[in-house]
Amino acid sequence: MRLGEAFDPRRNALNFWRLLLAAEVILWHSFLSTGRTAMVPHEAMQLTWSVGVDAFFAISGFLITRSWVERPRPREYLTARGLRILPGLWMCLIVTAFVIAPLGVAIQGGSVKNLLWSTGPITYVLGNSLVFYVLQGINGTPAGVPFAGSWNSSLWSLGFELLCYLAVLILGLMGMVKYRWVSVTMLVLATLIAVLQGPLVYPGVWSIGQLAARCALMFAAGAVLYQWRDRVPANWWLVALCAAIVIAAGVLLPDYRVAAGLALAYAVVVSGALVHGPSLRNDFSYGMYIYAFPVQQILVMSGLVSLTPMLFFGISTISTLPFAAASWFLVESRAMRLKRRIRGDGPLPVVST
Picture 1 (cartoon, helix red, strand yellow):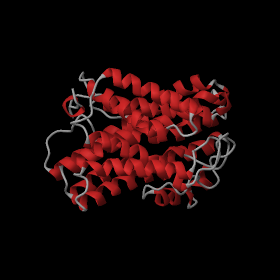
Picture 2 (picture 1 turned 120 degrees about the vertical axis):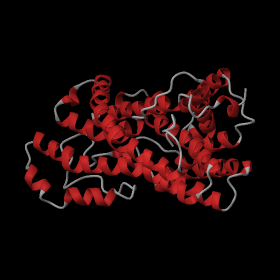
Picture 3 (picture 1 turned 90 degrees about the vertical axis):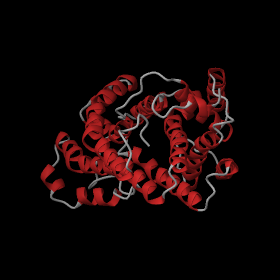
Picture 4 (picture 1 turned 90 degrees about the horizontal axis):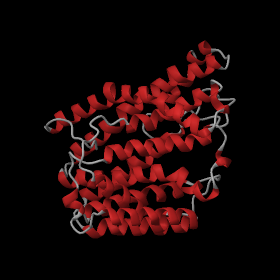
């Protein structure tokens, strides 16, 4: 069986995978936000802090390439991409600035009135509203926590996601997305750039070039799988082999992506395509991803920093779920219905793109 035959847009496990990946990011941030990153075994460090976001980009590369190939209309494409990301992000910024940050100030005995009457909250919202996360704190908050100065360190990836969307649009307008060799070329170029930029190491200072190469590599890997879907075999043995390659590369190499980026994309996308059981129609993954970090900062301020990272992870996940559900039902799903009305489509698809 080939990947093109195995993948059913309405019966797959990609939404479930994205939810698991959001949970993996919360797991890493449970060590980060409590100041316990030293507890992560050295052999597992690289995959722990990176595999969740990397796999997100691989799934996006697969689905967004599919979106353009099936509907190569620039206006519809941009509308769809904007309605999928921006409404949820804007609401998250507002909730963070006017609810979560004031709550954190109140917990720490500061002046909520001074915060709300300052320009800090509105500046935070407006400054980050164009997707790129340039303003991390609000009037010096959060403070007194292990990861101070940032209310939502998960948002850094959204700007690079947007750049990947624009790259597909530009290549599509040039008539190049239809050619199989383009995605392979992009993957090779991104891999070479990643090698030249040097590995991303935690702890460390990462350049924009390093982050861009990381994201482009994983997005291109997903695009390769879609463009070659009628040639790529889809079976569980190869999924297991690719997962083993990812683990080995994560332990042995300073940057596992240069050798195993495509393997990770295969393991996630193909396993998601092979599962044809009931799919998750309500996609909470985006809400879990964008709300978890500010929720974790509040939990730390509330005195839960002394908990073990695994227990903190469980409480963080449960505490974030109501925010994610509200984001989906009140904001994201409504924006997606609007998107489909604009495009003249039918009901919401199982896989949200």
